[in-house]
Structures are given as structure tokens and as C-alpha cells.
Image (tube, rainbow, N blue to C red):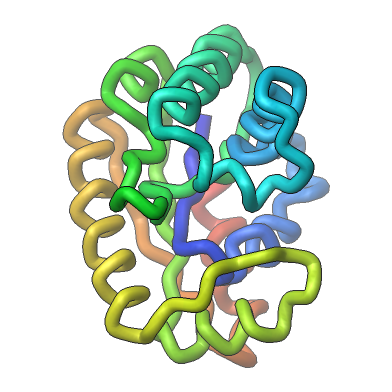
Length: 180
């Protein structure tokens, strides 16, 4: 399994679209969580996940983690290092989950926070809370620390892909090189 992470709005899924014909199956952790939370807690939108009670979020994370541990084949997991919630950051892949996964590589997609803010503001498909550049930078810094922790826990190397505005093809080429 290759795990690809980044701030919400960094363009992670857009970068990952380059992997569509590579033989990898793409799974989105948030989408898997949403399907469970929709049934169990009646939420209507994926962006409501981060506002669930933390214990409910952890329960849904664990259920998805158990399912992911059973997956076989070439998998790319699209997820977040951490989730910004009203109560603070929630770890995206707790140790109890990441230790169950067979992780080959960890990839972190990043971009200047000003570009992330612009992408978020131009995305009508998502309902995101307004954040300052300082807050986003703190979240990105926190994620980089978690990325190192995930690497230590799994023994998998980590890589950083910069997804600069107007440079999508370079980011996608770097991703494809990491998938070889």
C-alpha cells in the first residue's frame, strides 16, 4: 500500500489522477469513513465528518482501518495526516491502524499555503471552514511531523511532492516515478 497525504485543498486527488491507469486501486479514507458515518450517525456531507464527536470519529476510523488491513493488491490510499476539528487536530492514521497496514511508501503532497487557500476558495464541491494562512501553515507543519512518525512506525520511506500552481504535470510525473 502506498499512502498519499496532504492538507485538504492541496490538490492531492488531482495529483493522484495521474495514477488512474497504472494498475493501482485508489481508495479514499474519507469517503470510506463517510459511508460508515452516514449509516451510523446520519451525516449528510463528507465535510461533516470532522465535526463528529471525536470518539465517533475514532470508531469510524478504526472500522475503516480494519477493512484496509484486509485489502490485497496494489493500493493507493488517499488520506490526511491529521484532521483539523473544532477540538484540535485528530491524527488521521492512529498507531493502532497504521501498524496493521502493509505500507510500502508514504507520499506527502504540499504547496504554499496561499495556493492551498486559493484552491479551497475556488472549490464549490466542498464545505470547508475558513482558516488563516497562519493556521494552515501550522497544520502543514504538524502534518510533516506526523509523516515522520508514520515512517518510523511503518519502516516505509517518505517522499514530499510539491504541487505548485501551474506545475501539476511535474507533481504528477514525480508521483508516477514513485509508483514504478
